[in-house]
Length: 219
Image (cartoon, rainbow, N blue to C red):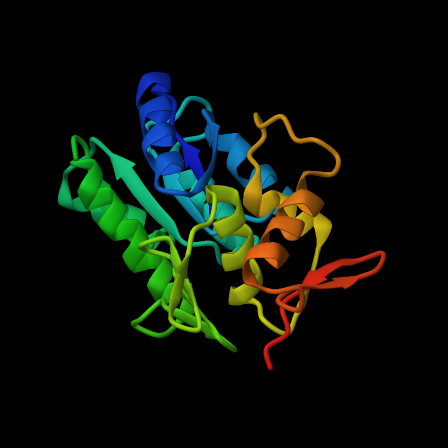
């Protein structure tokens, strides 16, 4: 899962990025409101954390532009503005949730999980694909009832493929799910993760679609 933080307080943005990265999310950060639409239009994000007091284009205006372009990505506003009218304006502009600073990181984590659950539909986020059970919240996977230890990016790759079981995902889409803008990515990194997953979960768990990307068979 990939999260975009839009926050001009660089210290806060850095702290949030570290905390959410430790939870297994891929996190990118921008600091100005007019960067939001280009970023979301260019790459895939599962959720946006949006401050309102941004330089240049304020958060509400940036959000309106995002929704005008029919971008459905969930947005949680994180702001010091605690007046009722601010909440109403943010939600009317297209925000999915509104969290007032200062907040506890555990509350933010819970709200992120709630938004992602709603995005995916069922109340339970546990994914079941053939003999695999994948819990994105706990970051654990079971194969035929036995727990399998995965590295963070191995789990992220498996979760992305399982969430789209039966569909072919391009290399670009998968790399966007695994790596942020500041990550140093080797050219064969994706292949290495796929190789490790096949060793741990079975050679047939991921199928290569030559010239396109990879898919996890749903049956």
